[in-house]
Image 1 (cartoon, one colour):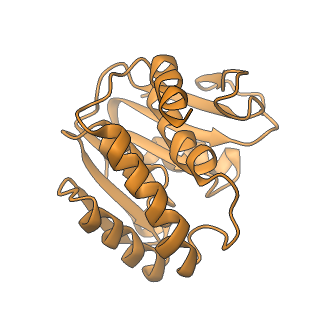
Image 2 (cartoon, rainbow, N blue to C red):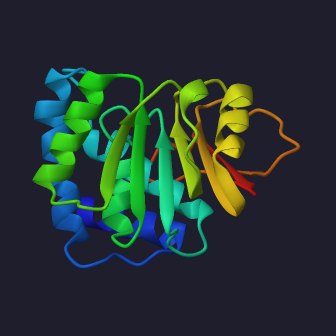
Amino acid sequence: MKRRQLDDVLAWTGHPAPARLFDRLEAFEAWLATEAAVSGGVGPNERDVWVRHVLDSLMFARGFDTAPASIIDLGSGVGLPGVPLALLFPGSAVVLVDRSGRRLASARRAARVLRLESVSTTQAEFSGYSGVADAVVMRAALGPGDAVHEIRRHLTPGGVGVLGIGRAATETEDGVLERFPGSEVLDPGRWLHIMRG
């Protein structure tokens, strides 16, 4: 069941699985359910970590035609969606940005456990962070208006930003909204706001 769900998500995003992706994602799922729960990165009684966090994070790849050279995950917490994207795109340099040192310490631990040398972390408030990348992602760290502004501020020219939006999609003049597929894979009430730089 889980492997079929992963295949469905990858088919929707348009990206092939690198070697051992399923096994590495399962290892990240187990880490989220144990160590990340202790640090407050996910709820202590979180239901279906595989769907709600691992597969949900992979859905952000829908915004990218090819693997980005660099990805910034703003408000990453313990590495969501940055760590699953680093597993999907092993050649991408991924920077996890969050203001919480405790959560970033957990994210660094996850990167070590998964042997993700391409992942680094930066502790900063959004207003004080000046990094730029080909791809910028954000999952539930700010409201849509502020999030779009922050994502755009960190994109290189021609880059792509992807914002995860909850059940209520807001009107936008900037970018396109993509709704998660209405299948068993994920909650079809979720949306992605994809912005091209």
